[in-house]
Length: 259
Image (tube, rainbow, N blue to C red; front, side, top):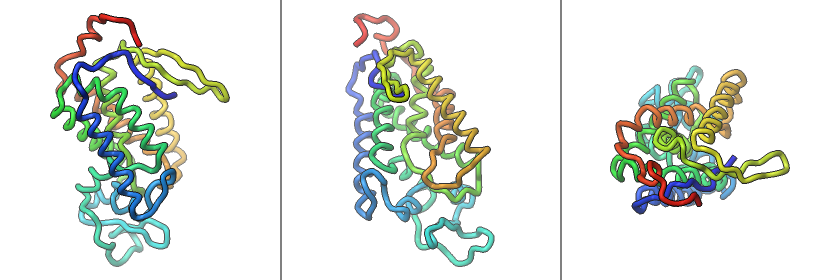
């Protein structure tokens, strides 16, 4: 299920949304300079160095590194010695938000950010939108870390911060219409869904898959950080009223047809 566009025009050019998309794309290509592929993403070493790792968050000062293809961390039982020089954990909390594991990963995140972010930016202004976006990413990291405080699995991607934007959009524009591409096994259809329905389905998927991970964790770095999505989304729901003080006029009193 992929959103294609909504029916709320923006009154101002969404410079921050555009800048965030540009920054994510730039970082994506920069992270490949040390190796990696367009569809496979950066090297494992780059992910460990610049991704956020729950163990490093809950054991400040201890760092993780690759050893024979496995992520090991200072202070873990049976681990001796020190990791090579690593970026500070506070740095990786932010750098991880702009890294992606391949073209499909960044493409999906940027699609969601463009469709929903421009209207949220419109509702709160540029400076507050930057703060809201970054705090959503940090909230996503916090919940993902709380689920397993000793996890030595690096996470990367803008999806936690984008999920915060989705949560904010849900409360601001629940009756907006979202043109959605829906895949039905080998068929697909274009369906216009109310934003509240689209985002409820999206959140329900994250919750179901997240609970499934708890009962059958893979422990693999290539998995999806569903609880990061949940954490970001909940932050957006809880914090949006502190950041946004207006709705788009064309949402409150529509003046022209959809699309």
